[in-house]
Amino acid sequence: MADAQARTLVSSYRSGQQLVNILDKQILSSQPELHSELLQAAAQLVQEIAETTSGKENLKPAAGAIAGPMESSRARASIPDLTFIAPRGKFSLSLLSSEVVLGNGKSEVVVPFTAISKVVVLDNIPKDTKKRVLLFIVLNKDANIKNGNSKVEHIILQTTADATLHVELEGGEPLDGMAAVVLCGLLGQAGVTPDAFLSPDADVYSSAKGDAALAATVKVSGGYLYPLPGALCFIERPQLFIPHLDIRGYGLARAGGASSTFDLQLHLTSGGSPLEFSQVDRQELGKLQSYLDRSRIRALGADEGASGSRAGGSGAGGSKAGGRGAGGS
Image 1 (spheres, rainbow, N blue to C red):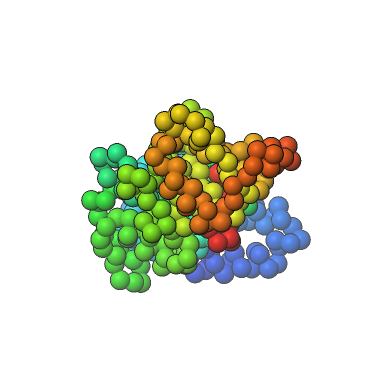
Image 2 (image 1 turned 45 degrees about the vertical axis):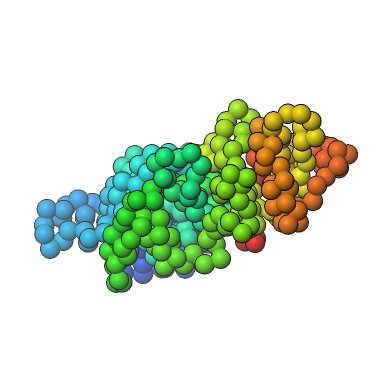
């Protein structure tokens, strides 16, 4: 069990929180290895007590406890069997005092609320007959969130426009309504600030077909590019969130010829090769250029784009979880 998970498990009890405070104050700075060993031992003790008393009614874990390794940890709210695109699979979502935990018995992802940069609500996905709604949770660039050995750069939860949720909150009024709205409400109650929530705005961008997104291809994968207030977002593969602040400028390829499509190239402040969205319908050219110009993303000449690419850097990979968000973080 990771130290962060052990800390959460032990701290979920009042006396456990006192123990963690003592360990942090007396041992952490001078003997970090001993601190870790004592924290792990305390977590193991909590788990063993829970297993020993699991058949005794008056000592059962409280309602809302998380299943799996953190089953004794008290949660303000817990929702089972939610569908996630990233990390992919079914997870329960549990809201603790300072973090949200995804768990499915096989793995566990612990996300401190302070690591959440943006929550992008994507609905009205073109040609999507399932009426899906995606919650694209953007994590800070320096957040060290892991799913096993893999780094988690963002979290994407999938629900539908018809889905509803009823969630009991420990010490608060229950939340009831459209699933996406309830989930955003939970994050808001947890401390995610209102300016962190982002969604398509028809006044900011609407495609030539009246959609919130336009079809494009990244490398060989087709998907949809959402021009948002302060950022661009691409789903589903690769999953990209690019704040305007991370964009040095843009270029257009095949925009002046007879082709029925064109390519949008975003030159990032991190340098490297431009991030290209290809095979965009020519009908979208005017609207997309207008959006970019209003967003004060300047068009780059061929020489400017080439010099930026030669400057080096991480290239498109640096944009995958733009931690500054639309307005910085």
